[in-house]
Every structure is written in C-alpha cells, then in structure tokens.
Image (spheres, rainbow, N blue to C red):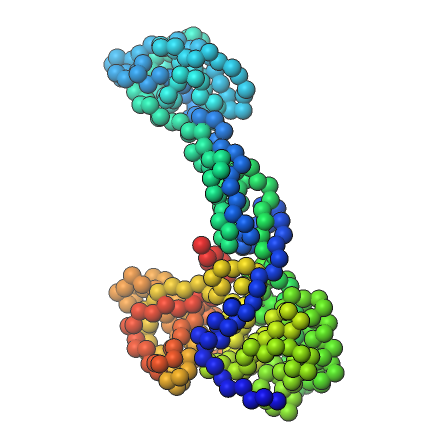
Length: 418
C-alpha cells in the first residue's frame, strides 16, 4: 500500500470541506426547520400586519384634536363607532372631534392617526368621552408591514434557521421552507474487543463507547445515525461497509485506523475503490484520521483511542458532515477566552488540541473575558465528558502562556451559528 505522509491540520480541514458537496434539498414544516440550513432565499408573501393596527385598548383619534388635552383641560370627543381585532367593517372616514373605541389588534379607522390608551380617557356616556392626555401621531399604532413587507427577504440562502425565523416565516405567509437534507451517518465500531452497549460484556472486552458518543453528537446536530460493530476480519468489515454504503449518506469508522496487523479499515476501503484524500494528520490527539470518497459518499476513518476518536470527529468528520448538510461555515463555533495556565504543544510542525472548560464569569481573574481551564490532568473519558471547549496550539508554536487571550472552539450544537 502507498505510504501516505501526514499533512497539516489546516490542509486537512480545507481538503475535507472543499471535497464534500451538500446533499439535495427538501421541504419541511416550519416547526421542523430550526437547526436546518435554508436552500433558497425566502421573500415575504404578505404584509404583516396586514393593516394599521392598534397596540392598545383605547380610542382611535385625530392627534390634532387632543393636542392640548390634559387633566385640567380635557377634550370632549364623540364616539363614532368601535372596532375589535379581526373584525371586517367599513367605516366612514373620521371627522374632527370624533373618536373610535378600539381594541388591541383592531384596524385603525380611516382618518385616525393615533390611539389614546383608555387610562387617559373618562367615559361620560355611550356617546361621549373626554381625553385627559395627548397622543401624538403614530402613538400606539403598529403600521402595516412593520414586521415584514411583501417582497422583503426574510431568509437568505445558506442561512441557519432558528425558532425565531420559523415564526417570522409564518408571519410572512409560509407554512414550510426549503432546506438542505440532513445526512444519515453510518458509524462502524471495529475490533474484536468491542461490544455493543446493552449486551453482556465478556472478560477482556469493552463497550463501544466511541460509537455512542459520535452518534450522540450527530443527533445533537439533527442527523440520523446507523450504529454497528464489526470484527477485525476483512470479510466482515467489507460486508459491514457495503451495507453502510447502501443505507447511509456518509460513513464513520471507529478503530482499526493505524497500520497494525489488525488495522484493516484503510486496506479494505482501498480494495473497495475509495478515493483517499488523506490519511494521517499532524494533530494530537487524532493523528490517524483519514478521509476519502467511496461511491460519491464521504468516509471518515477515526482512530479507536477515545481522545483521538472524539478529537478527529470534532475537527474533521463533524465539519465534513456539516458541509454535507449545507452549513456554509462548517465547524465548531468559537469564542475569545483568557488562558488560566500555560498550554504546551508537541512539536513546531504539529497542532495540539486540549480539552477544557470555560468559566464565563472571569471574576477570579479580574477580566471580563471568559477563562479557559485545561482538563489535561483528568482521566481521558472524564475530561471528554466534562469539556465545554477546545484550545489549540497551532503549528509554529509549542507554548501559549497563561493570561493570553485566544479563540477556543465551543463544544455545543446549541450555540447556533448566525
């Protein structure tokens, strides 16, 4: 097999996102849009509100009629009618000295240019009120189209949709929206020693926790998964990968990524005809990560060690899957933090990643910036579970000193990218 030299992280990331093409599109109900990427620009079909509407219960008036009204000199007005939200009535234009009883959301009568809240009104009879305060033009009125206007661009193509956008699209006349499809990801945990969770655990075996972690991350980004284990034999690996290829949009293998006697994944993929883009990156943890295309579907090779497995997923596989789902800027979100301790890298031509937690208060350090605390002293599974962020010592550096301000990656799919 051809010997492949490790490439740098930036090159590997770029090759990944440049190679992958988003899946096709589909139309989904607005309630299912949050977290999805719009596949087309959406222009409002209507004005919302469709009328000049009252923002308060009160009285529609001509502002000039009550320009001098106050408690000592109230202005008497004649009630010319009433209007409630949703009513369809035709009124004669208001005349000077008239007022309309109006409820929140009701259409403003022609000729009225303000709404006087009812707390500033004395009702003298069913025909007469006195205004005790002014209401300048536009007071307590929601103008037609002030939320959205017909033809206004509500959502841009490639924009991440949030619950707020679902609401404004509904106001703009939509009940569904076109979005990029979310991939179904097959996660194949390899190794004679791995056992699917929920089954009895024989001596010398271990549960496929990597598979569960990766599947959970995929689900948190709205992706479906197929999870399966496979023993370290060429026949079983090939059969499992073929089945995954037939039933998923992308494949992640976990384990068997190196060059040992039982590290067969790359060999089997080459036999199956995949186009290898790279295999091995100058990163730690996660050097054995690989990526290629098999039958037009992306395949990610991840090492079996938990820190390397998760880091390879977060840095390479997850951005690739996000690109497949149409994200215009794939990858974890970032935030600026202050380092609480020195970060040491491995080599000058290496990118070292460090799991950590972020203290958003920063109070103990006299800074308004959040503070990053490394979890290097924790056990590997514990540090992975507790981590909320990842710091990187990039190529060209072997040390970032305590007190430095750097950007870290935020491990959360809930900080939606705008």
